[in-house]
Image (cartoon, rainbow, N blue to C red):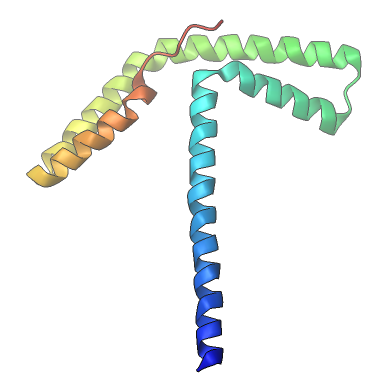
Length: 128
């Protein structure tokens, strides 16, 4: 009986650790994604640092990579601004279609989910 209790305790500790790992990873990824959305320049710095370290770039290459990524960042920002209204329209239409097939209780939960995710449809903050 003692062996069974010990085995059960080990299994419970393992499951609790796995659950904590999943939740912690999910929180960390959500935080990273939110940070990347709020401050895309941080992503550029991480990419530059990664390229510099993994490719062992010299000083001239680092300057060129920075210039290239800065230009790409500006082009992506322009694309997001240009296509944002269409993306919002597609998402809004899909939300309306989903809402139409839900029960009233599901609609309430869906509306709450939409409010939680609304920040992703907001225009990005101006860069500082």
